[in-house]
Length: 274
Ligand code: ADP
Ligand code: MG
Image 1: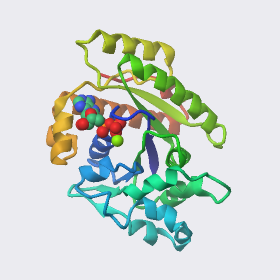
Image 2 (image 1 turned 90 degrees about the vertical axis):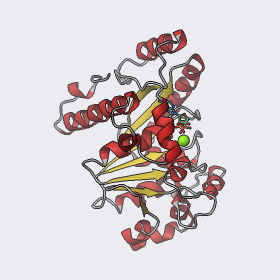
Image 3 (image 1 turned 180 degrees about the vertical axis):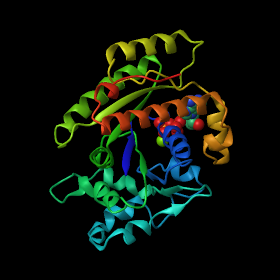
Image 4 (image 1 turned 135 degrees about the horizontal axis):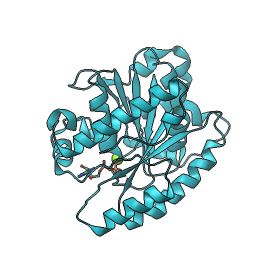
């Protein structure tokens, strides 16, 4: 089982869209779990569940964490199947917000998600974690649990500042991990007609040459339309430019994982793209 976390402490940069779209694409061949750790629950709402009223959610993992010792059954009882094959969701609840104010402390709160996902290793091939735009307890959990970190960055000037902060924080957090955390910056919401998009993309690639995906996710209203009707974009409009870009990203990520698994670190660097 592989775990990918999608994160950026800025809102509205395409985190949830990236999680759902990659999830939909992966579900064509793999058993996929989408884990919503954002108290706003956009991903949960995408699949027509209400984060304000859910009684079983990612929050339960934390509030009843002593039950993780019971085995997979407890975690599975929090998951719902979507209308789409191979695509399940462990939803967020608004109550997750109360965790953000908690100190991590010595009670192991930082590894709750990692421990929960370890119990599902035989049930899913890929878990994608959607995160809140905050570097709190939930983000610490998402970073501790993942093999791969995807950072969608809006291609506009103001986003650059946030990106620097994020990369610094990641480097700090990564020090407490035993394994190095691979991260990939995804240029998102790219609009080739605007100078800001074009020059910001150039800056991101220049500043982070080894960590930026060679492609870009364009602005595509079909992605927004898909979220309105609650259908994964790859099923709603498989040929759209946005889905094509995500497909190319997905293929590239899979290929890179294969290369890494075969010990070919050269192949682990940049490539692919649209
Ligand atoms: P985040 O999770 O980072 O807050 P979202 O994925 O929810 O961001 O995206 C914010 C809004 O932008 C949503 O309405 C979404 O449908 C829209 N959106 C995201 N990516 C794109 C895109 N590539 N093109 C057009 N609209 C997009
Ligand atoms: Mg979101």
